[in-house]
Length: 125
Image (cartoon, rainbow, N blue to C red; front, side, top):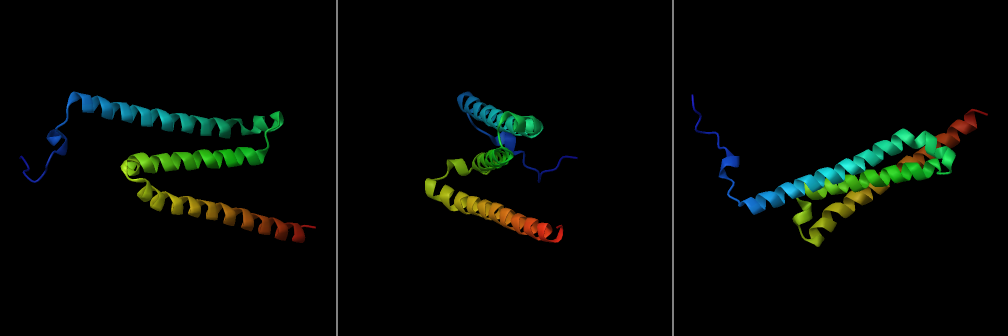
């Protein structure tokens, strides 16, 4: 039984072969960028114990990991939510509060972590 209420949108795509190549090139580029950032994140996580002995501090590793994660999250928002095609003002209106909120969460995490550490050191003496 054939349904007439289902519309196949992919059959309605009217673009040239050049546009198709451009779209495929962008898809490959996005895939490579996200794969490289993910591989670096996994490598940092897997090799973090070995890196401490080479002089890199644990704090630097953690902040680098947070920075890579934020870069990847911002890139995902720019590409998959089509924010990269918008004007600078709209990008700023959407991304600046996002990054401020992330910084706020990091601040709360650090502040409360120090408070918990102080409370535990008081009672564990």
